[in-house]
Image 1 (cartoon, rainbow, N blue to C red):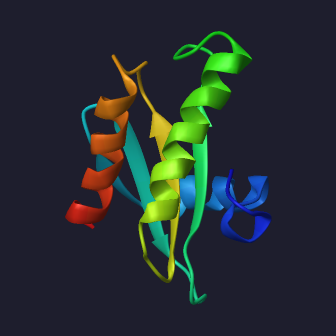
Image 2 (cartoon, rainbow, N blue to C red; image 1 turned 30 degrees about the vertical axis):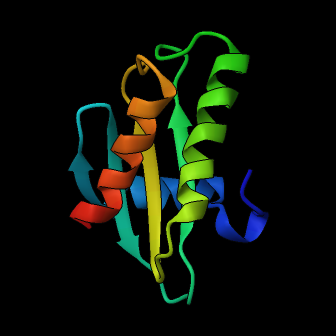
Length: 103
């Protein structure tokens, strides 16, 4: 899990969902918005339609946040929405890496 410093609050997520620049990949959607900080902040949204059980949603969030820790970006807020359940973790990890290649 990311430390609180690197996570977006609920109100910040709502602003980012409205104003952020969108990018759709096959498995996920990303909204990106610049911030005035020297580090990036992240939020992940996984609905019950994607993974019905909280255990599954939390596992997916751990995988996503684990990949995000490896990326060194600065000055942007990222809102990641998972559209469908991935076939396996490796596909999800590769998709997360594409965010920063396309950014």
